[in-house]
Amino acid sequence: MRAKEGRRVATSVVAVAMFLCGASTLTGCPYSDPCWEVEACEPDPVPPPGPCEGEPHTAPALDECGVFVSASSGNDRNPGTKGAPVKTVQHAIGLAASGRGNGEAPTRRVYACGESFEEEISLPSGVDLWGSRLCGDSGDWSYEWSGIGPSASTVIAPPARIPVRVLGGDEGGIAGDEATSLIVGVRAVAADASASDGKSSLAMILSSGARAIVRDSKIIAGNGKDGEPGEDARSEPADDGMWGNDGADACTADFAQGALPVVTVCDDGIESTGGPGGYGDLESGGDGASGQPVPVENPAGKGLGGIGAGSSQCSDGVEGAEGLDGGRAAGAVGIGQLSSDGWIGVRGEDGKRGGVGQGGGGGGGSKSRGEMMACAAGRLRAGAAGGSGGSGGCGGQGGKGGSYGGASIGIIALQGSALTLERTEVFAGNGGRGGVGGTGQPGGVGLQGGHGGIGYGDMWAACSGGRGGKGGRGGDAGGGLGGPSYGVASVGAYVSFGPDAPAKAGRGGDGGAAGNAAPDDDLGRGQAGGAMPYRQFDVPDSAPPQ
Image: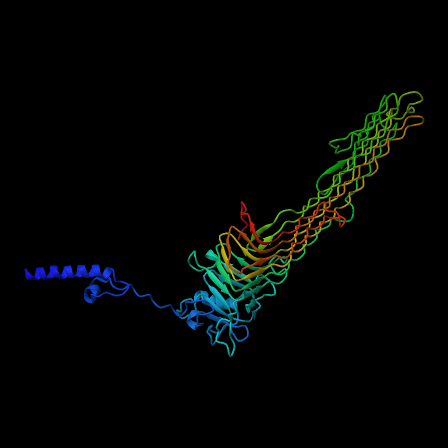
């Protein structure tokens, strides 16, 4: 019984102690023993920071914290420690992402010496790149802190390709949707026209799903290349038409069939046909047929067949209509699109093919009976037949559209990526001019129709076919789109400009002129490239493959 009462008293004391301790947890508890029993006196102690934690300019550079790289003293056979750095940044990134071996955990950090590295790098999201480190014989790999991003001394400047690409998602190989790379103290410099298309200059790309913070750095794109001119069509004219066939002479048949048509088949499969001649007979001649193809609108009666002889003589076939010229195509318009390869522009429109010339109309046929008209006894009796029309010339081919000029873009952020810029300058160069459109090919010549058959004695002759029309000249192509200049360009991405993070554009390239255009003739000229510090692209309905 006393034991139970004792326990009740102790419980009361603990309860009182807990009440008293609840008001004194920040300063300690006056009742030490009961407080230890109820664990209510002091908060859990905060663990000290790890040796690798801290800001780049204050955290110590330790072998256990990252992989070290020096272009001047490193060797890629080394383990990447301070005393034995590797030589290339990409090899250091691989070691940081996967570990040095022997079961060592990945450090996910690279310490880059303040030197120039002539290589392109791919950085998985979640691996940091801390540049501008003091290295060499007297260096301790501390951060060469100046507080000014443009003073970054680690230079990534390959002679070609994109200097820095940040990978995301499955491409990056680092687990976690929120894996973010911190890039500090780096100067990424792209050469002119260094992207894979050989036109654009791009300094950094964030792939789909990539995440990066760029701090105290400078990102510089070079100039885009001018677009190539569109291919000119052949300078030799397109295929000419064919001579029409001559009609049969009078008194050489009992019924003289009109001359057969001639057909020119152009290389695009379109045909020009001279109209067949009219027949020759005793009392009248037949009408010649019209040449083909007949124009949709033909108020002048081009290519009509001649009238056969009756009470009056026959008439010749009419010359065929000329094919329509291809004209001048439109210049490129739009802003292009972003992809994993960079920026893709718009070519000028190709020139249209010239129209085929219409065949000439067939000549009218004649007759053999009438005053002072008749075939001699013993001869066949029909009058002369008309000649067929000549076929028209083929239309010339159109020129090819001018190519787009290359872009200059400091950073591209693709769909689902996240980019934060802090104390970092981004510069774009100038976009390239759009290419000039190609010139069209001259059309082929239409040829003469066949002669009508001759009469016998005083007999009326048959009539000739009309000449084929000339083929239309191929169209001149439009000029290509001028290359843009954007500091940062994004599509479906999150982009944040922090303090002291200006983005500056250069000059967009002029649009290319149309083929065969005078310098001050803007018809068919491509649109000039845009120039903006930051440009957001609309997400396409069908996004290009990344």
